[in-house]
Each structure stands twice: as structure tokens, then as C-alpha cells.
Image (cartoon, rainbow, N blue to C red; front, side):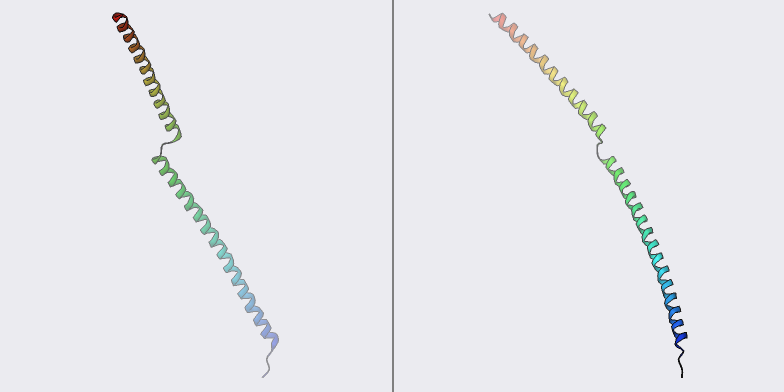
Length: 103
């Protein structure tokens, strides 16, 4: 029985070439699948961030609204301060008039 090594090495080479080609195709598919998953994850993350931003905008007072509320509060405080000064002046006048009548 004679084994022809030339044909055996050719068969081995063919099998290794086929296995290498299949491994290369498999690797390329894995890369594409991984990239697709990353893109999907980024889209999902962006979507979640948008949803969170909407919830935050609905739940919390925004800066312009807060600024407007502060201005109204400060104006109200100034009005109260002016009213107190007016009352103080009127009380002083009343006390001075009563003091003059007693004198």
C-alpha cells in the first residue's frame, strides 16, 4: 500500500484554506453584529436620555421660570417694605400730633 503524500498535503491544504475562509467570514460577521449592537445601544441610550430630559423638564422649574418667580417675590418684598415705611411715617406723625396736644 503506497500513500501519495502529494495528494494528502493538497487535501490538507484545501481543508485548511476552506477553514480559514470560513473563519474569516465568521469573524467579519461577528464584527458587523458587534457594530450593529453598539449602534443599537447608542440609539437606545439617546432615546433614554431624551425621555429623561423630557421628564426633568416636566418635573422641575426651569431657570427662566425661576428667575420670573424671584422677580415677583422681590417686588412684593419691596412693596411691603414701602408700606412699612409709610406706616412708620404715619405713626410718627400721629405721635407727634398727640405729643403737641399734650404739651
